[in-house]
Length: 336
Image 1 (tube, helix red, strand yellow):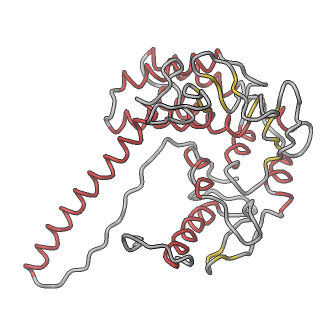
Image 2 (cartoon, rainbow, N blue to C red; image 1 turned 90 degrees about the vertical axis):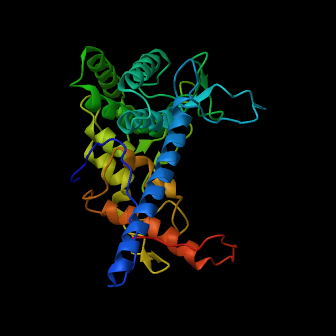
Image 3 (cartoon, rainbow, N blue to C red; image 1 turned 90 degrees about the horizontal axis):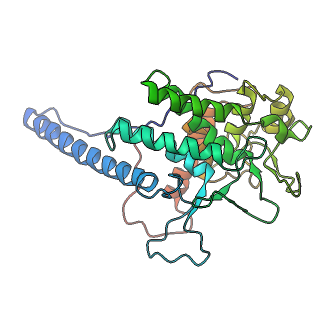
């Protein structure tokens, strides 16, 4: 693999293109309008970013400080799951805290205090060969089974959390004494994950392991979907790394992950875990790339920048084509 980069969350600027005439007065008006539009656009993006951040900050489960699986604004929880926290979503939330610090939504001291609290909590709850379960009751620290057989370790959700642990380590490792302590705790948690256990002695990673049914879920993680980060981290582990054959035979399906299929005249660039010639949901282009930069990321099977950008382009082309005739309130326009 080339150029595998662990990075913190970044926001992508939206490019706005404006046509103008050569007339000086028109040029001045155009510049003014461009500035006004850019200012309004930046304010809207900041508001969206701040409000999204608050889900992980103000909306966090109070005992754990972690991301709730869901928040019902009416306060009604028929399944009594108001305190259930999600491990993968908490990974996203921890990275959002770092972004919140950098964006000035919270102070550095506030952010570090929350990160320290969550690192301690993560070290206290039950783990399964170093991996966390999908859900926990935040107030009691007990596992909430996702399903009958899914009551133990979830290595994919753990991967979403693990990329945040590495991000925290890198962000705080050169800070003050308190920050370095948080970085050290994050590093210990990441290094404690036994990725190799989740191969069950085979050349593939299995999504789940249960203390009661072992590998009874029997769900191998194969490409392409949101599971890429699982294989990257498993191969990168300094303590429990998988063999390269697990990546090539498991994730890459012994080369069958390659695809020459197109949808709406746009190459898929890889075989999605969907019906032949179809693509998966867009979150497949999000989750792994909070910690990985797809630009320059490639293996012998695919260029992952092409994979992610074409995934988005297909969705845009489908929306523009609107084959089911949905009524659009605004025209769909996309900048370069």
